[in-house]
Length: 471
Picture 1 (tube, rainbow, N blue to C red):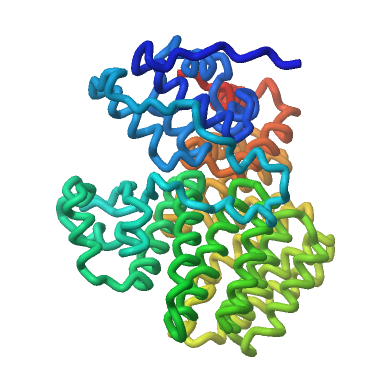
Picture 2 (cartoon, rainbow, N blue to C red):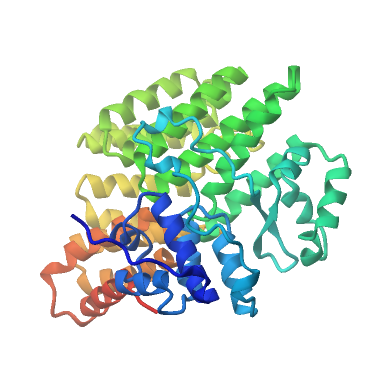
């Protein structure tokens, strides 16, 4: 039997109040200190002292709780208020008195109809400031239904602090902006934010947007409803990708099924084909080669002949062949993908898979070479891909660095592997990407043969510090 948690005294001080709120949100999610610690990489003793009010919380810890527990900025705002000198008498009185959280429901994820329901307190929408930073602005749920994606419109304003004020929100709602166009713009901002900082900060807002889209569909007909279904497909696919990056494959599969269903309702054959190709990629990440190959072939059969979508499907199918240890078929599929890409019209004509280029095919081939045991070739391929990666793909750079480091270690280049691993570790700490973390865990194991190499020692110490970090 577990030890009974200490009683909290939230109104003893703002510090105690914040700790009680952090514990309340954690327990609503059904998470123990240990489980949350493993997720956010903070020491459990430190977390326990903060929750009891015995130690001040750092901004990093509060942000980690907020992101991991889906607080949509509430904990961060509370922490900021306390730092500004708000006394306990000015704080709300409902800490730790909320009802049971949906995460405690044993129902399967696909059956949890309310798992994406937005809070009645409102939603956080990402906007860009003048200097290019992403800032989350809180709007009420009703305001978002009235002018969904308001953050995208705010991005064009010059005074971000004024944009967060109620008056500016009212102006936005009264502006008559098209919510469908604002939804599209908001999705682009969310994707940018994911590339820079990782999925944990983005998932709650994506799910809230999906719930809002479903509400908007209730009173739309014809073309507008079809556009909303297309957007629901795109947001669901994005949500699946975010969970895939976090390593939560069960949730990723759920959202990819949601995306496939919405694409069929939208009647968009190209979008359905793209979702099938993405499901092949997910199967590859899950080391399911049969699914990866079969779904990729189904996607290519649906795609227009010699189209970009056909090339996307062939690329993901190639990795499925590599996972089956079929070097010949993998190489043949990559050559086929390159041939399709070379024959494409420079004007894509379709928004799906526009990111596919020769560099992307090469990095997927490097991933396959690693699966086939050609570690020198894989390391060289990842190194080349990193040099050609656009500047905004921060998290993807970390993934490729991690994979290059693993390949170097398996090729016997321990010191170089450790050096590259340190670069990947820095990106992992910034983004929270589980894909990078999985590669670092593999690297740690692969470097076990060289414990006395100075660079290896530096990497393993840094990794240990990151896992057990304490402010």
